Length: 499
Figure 1 (cartoon, rainbow, N blue to C red):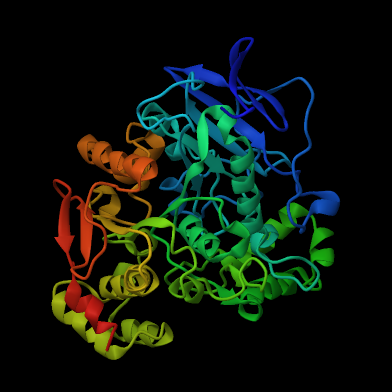
Figure 2 (cartoon, rainbow, N blue to C red):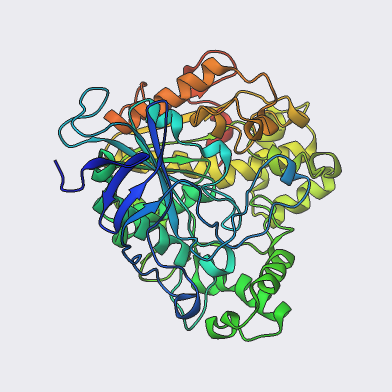
């Protein structure tokens, strides 16, 4: 057993990490340790700099409340009502949380062996400008209940995490994630976890981050398995990624340098960031933050590196929801406002070939132009790249790859199986009001039980419970109805992108 053994401190569960002793909270056999610093606060001389290891502490540190969230603004209406995004004040935003079965020391069975239990590390989404581990939907209790040590990570967002400057390292948010994964390797045994059985999983921008981590030489060896939910390999050159930084600098009327930005009041900086990037969406584009090909964290585009065999030894589970686009299109009225002419203009702007659009229109004769535009854009961004990634791993003899699709339709605002809807099912948190904001009150618990169990099984064994990817293109579909394996769903539409 590691020297970092699970122990009890007075009035609560305790764990001795390299930084010091922590006291968490215990409920129904699950210990939660919240707000643990994995790096120093990124302020003062450390602002716009790579993360530095957290300072150790004396005595027992309370880990009973979520730590500060990264500087951000809430989602703009109407998404703010659908996607809760708590804000916790403070500078020490580089923190993480651990939920663990308790007691852990000396336990066996249910996925635990002499080396400890399987570990899952959650990287939240939010377009690289929103989100945190304090979102109630991401509560790790169900994973710990089922024998997994669950870790969730805060990282820098927006201009402070993904700004591109000539006088500062790029991809600071990714560097934060790597620092957190390094912390897990060094400390997770204190919570009963096995550092050799780490699965990193994330959704949307979190999944895009994980694709970059899979491709990064700096993250090699930090995890064994990965789950990509509604996010595909994506990055831009530093020149392109820098455009958002330059647009914010122009609005602030300061040079586009880290030195100049560090002198700007944080609230003013967040206001300028929101003004520049707030009206864009992952589907419609405009000024967004991107992961940058910086020659360090990312030597090349992650898609190219992964196609060439990077992380071929890492087992993968990845997939999408059936109606990804509806989260961005329906609440804002795009499905109603986009007519045939606007559709053609936007398709041309999005560089979607006309012959591909023709196939989608033919197969969806009753859908509105805005709906077809949304499906095309989401497939280009997500489903098609993930299929290509799975195919590349198949031809390269990589470790097993599994694909899924989440299809249960939410009745809320006719969002159907929209982006982010699967999160409450994966975390088995359907009973929370914050989850019901997106699912409504009657989401099927049996579907959540099945989906959550698949994620747990994948973390423990590398097998979520269905056939791995092969030339027949098997995809496990979670709803509507009973989960079932479907071969090559919507194949005519997928093939259209090949021609």
